[in-house]
Length: 456
Image (cartoon, rainbow, N blue to C red):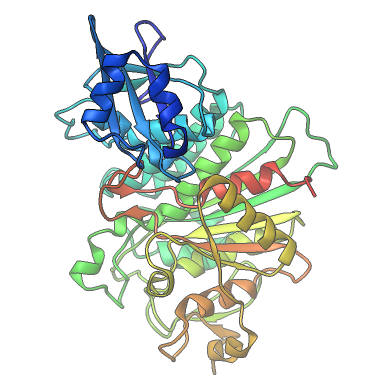
């Protein structure tokens, strides 16, 4: 695991203190160390770092926490501490699991083509919970997928990554391609048709070692558009620069599945990942085409750049037929969600208040926030079509994220508890614990909700 030392040998103590506990901490140190911290105005502010020295040189460090909670106050440590040094967290006024997670998330870098010049400091495995490590590995797995250049991660490679991850837990994934894809997922296949790289769906099922036939069935559906040109409604060049992340929803849910399986939650799990590329060619879908769907409903293509909902609608319809207890999809679906909530708050749409409450609570517990937006029925008519059961977009320039969610809702029976997560999946700049690049937004929130499925 990146950022985790192979063993605890020679690990130095890493303290973390809040301003309210600073006086007591200083009084516990040798006089010279306490004096040095005072001389450098160490006040226990968030992310303030002080090094402790002795006759042997560097003998420890102390991190200020301020009033912050959660992992990200620890997110700078891997880069701020000396290169190659190994550290052991000393218990204190913080959540040890979140602290270790923050350290490990901050140690991440995508180095497949350009190794960083300065290696990270490392965290000793001593005292680090397996759950913290599993969580960090799941997030970094998703980050790696999102960061992979699109020439190296097409639909086939994304499906293979899903299958390889599932195989690590003894699960054989089903890969649906070719004529079967057209028959089973016709709208998804229409999106894939324009690319030289054929579309695929990766599907697998898993059950925890303590799960029974009566255990909750959680179904996940991920949008895996490996690159999105917009199709014939082509995107401006600037809007295409980050379109390798358009498979972010798939990456998040694959990371979530990895974490659920690693923690052996007592549930039944189904995962469906729609792996396509939205390209332009003589075979690509056109504006005004009418598509069939898995549910038997027809869709007029009002805009070929609204392809993600066409991928998801087939997956959701098939998943809903299994009558899951919770049906959750994740997708980098709309720019409108970012206009409304910015890059750090995924938009959540949900047809079930109990599920919505569980997801929001998971976001608070894990410091991985979600924000609920309404499935406003007054906008349903905006999806009307004169030639098909519905259009895939509205002619109105408003409420794009809501309209997209309303489209998806038409493929989920009312009795199924369903949530749609519209994610950005990208860090625009380097921040503590959040390196610039792909990000597994909502993964930990969803995991917490599933982990606590029966807590109420």
